[in-house]
Length: 240
Image (cartoon, rainbow, N blue to C red; front, side, top):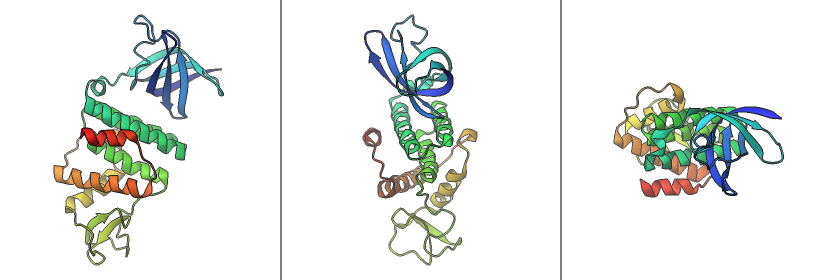
């Protein structure tokens, strides 16, 4: 049957001499599609089947086999990402992470968060911060959200002095023992970034020290609790 899908090409592979098999990340998950003749320069599918291309894809859908591409309409080619190795690395990481989380919980909201994130990176927003925001939000889908509204130990909302991945969230002055202290702005930003709507971000102005502390917390938290280990994350860290 025919299907009209909104999605982003997350991978492309050569098939025979002139065709491609692409994987589209959509609100319904990842779908494999064959694009006949897509490797030919004159093919109408040449541009629309390249990695990190966002569009409308009309396909002949096969539930237990390869679907076939019929027509495409590019909505954004994310060209600013494609010409920057750092942006490509971040985009690759958040793509793999979003798909992995979608496997855990098939929630259409994951696709929306991913699309908003990759769009902001393409528009020039700090890819580190955008990635951190997405990672924070996806913890809900994994069922391991940290405690960021009160002290994880006593429940107090006052005098929060640090955030601990080991303890699982914010720590107040009275419960603090040996956990490393963070900048007070880091505590405010972690909570603010969790609740922010990525699609509506118009400005990001975060001190480097704060960005570093947020990233350290998120990385350690994922390592401790998520069970997700991605090669793209290791690659990203080496490039950084």
